[in-house]
Amino acid sequence: MIQAWLWKLGLGRGRVHVFYDEAYRLPLSGIESSVGIEPRGTDFTTWYLLEAGVVRAADVRHPVPVSYAQLARVHDARYLESLSDPATLARIYATDPSEVPVDALLDSVRLVCGGTLGAARLALARQGPVVNMAGGFHHARPDKGGGFCTVNDIAVAVADLRASGFDGSVAVLDLDAHPPDGTAACLAGQPKAWIGSVSGSDWGVLPPGVDETRVPDGCDDVTYVQKVKDLLARMPPSDITFVIAGGDVLSGDRFGRVGITLQGARKRDVAIAGALRGRASVWLPGGGYHPESWKLFAGTVLVLAGLGHQRITARYDPLSARFQRIAHLLDPEKADTAGKTPEWEPFSLEDLEGPLRLGPEVQPRVLGHYTAQGIEYALFRYGMLSYVERLGYSRLRVQVASTGGTGDRIMVLGHAGGREHLLSDSVLEKKVLQGETFLFANWLSLRHPRARFSDKRPQLPGQQVPGLGLSRETTELLLTMAQRLGLAGVAFRPMWYHLAVVARGRFHFATPERQGRFEALMRDLSSLSLVEATRAVAEGRVRLDGQPYPWEPDDMVCRLSPLPLDAEAVAEERERCHFTVEPAGEPAPASG
Image (cartoon, rainbow, N blue to C red; front, side, top):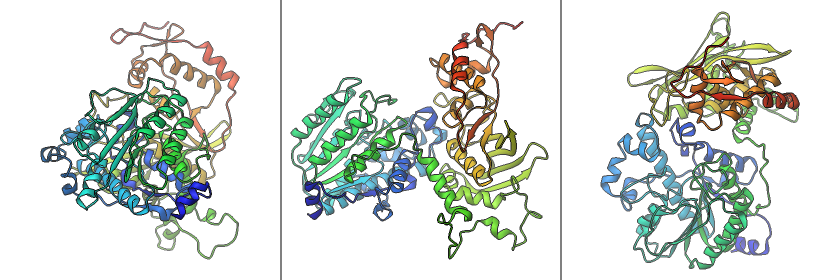
């Protein structure tokens, strides 16, 4: 009551309870590249909220997975049984069955459902908003999943509340970009359940009683927010409301066509939070297939915390911030930022190896610093080993060796299917580029040998097996290593076009002229998918100003202290170069 009173007076900020677990991240290594889903979105939102102090560590609840008995209150027995088949899950997540670790994936799904149920129970107890950092699987029907939704967490939570004696009214406010077809099917015929939706797609006829509003493609903020307010005016009073604060309504979303801005989404959430103030509500992110979808749901929680005015810095990178924070804890020299001598100092495995006679005379050190055990510990602390284990590999170990000339080699190996597999292979050295010393990756391969290539995840030039989906984490780890070694940054030489495209968010070519040609190439190949474009370059079907263009594998760099390239020189080269593509099957003309 006191909290509600403070809200009415506009005083202070609210305490927001959230449900979250690292295992919310789906163990699907190819979903980022093949589908466009940011698999780290839930992590990004949570990390930001914790770092910004919006959510306290004590307010993060870890969910309990729902049981099959709880799922069976909503979903058919035959359908639940089919979930043990990788093909069923592969269809739902638009991936290949070879990529689906059934047990780990279903563990994630059941955990998220448990988060929604836990949030519902807590919301009723507190008579206020509670957040589940994943969930809103509104396309899952009693007998079928689809659209990245395996089971319907809202319907499962409602059914469990009913079984526990809850007899109140339920509202579902679905503001995902797609209509609530699955939730409508699951709750059909329930007299005390109401569903309202503002979406931007037509998925067919919904059951009677669903209050559905469809907005036009590319809807502006003012129109969209007004449609939401109109829906709120029609929404009947409810004892608990489930809000899907859809992240796929942003302009440029890969699958959503609504098209509003982050500011428009924030205004939407302010209106909903005001309408539900002092009442039990569960907030879920739903879909989101845009690089900034995580910011939208972070903004939702900011609104619930009474901080709706707070903006998220445009350049803020939650993954980089997370790695920097962990590196700070691991590095004894940075343990005390005030410069005082702490009563205790954190130590790494390297600090133990001297007294234990496991030092350089016995164990090789990568770049003169990192042992195999130290690297394995770092991979554990940064969460990369646990993710690889969820992909189906066990008994993970790190092996290091000197190549005798091209750098130091790091291999990560793991067991699956009765044999040991090479999962990561890299060769690193210190190299001087333009007067600065970089951590240079002569070779880097992330490998998922249990997966296979398919139409949904085609083989790219240079690939022997599909990747692990950890390229961004690996980049951050290398940058952390470079920082600890006092180097200028990280550099590598992309041997294929797609590697440069993937890296361009953090890396640029070392010279403005080469960067300009690369930007011109991306511009002129923009009508092709990345797979089509990189194959065209690799097959010699690309021309530069009419002449065959061989890919230029030049150095790309990421400096810890960025130095901008000569923008004028980049633009001049970009405008000078014009690329064309020959159709597949037609050999490129001979040069000369």
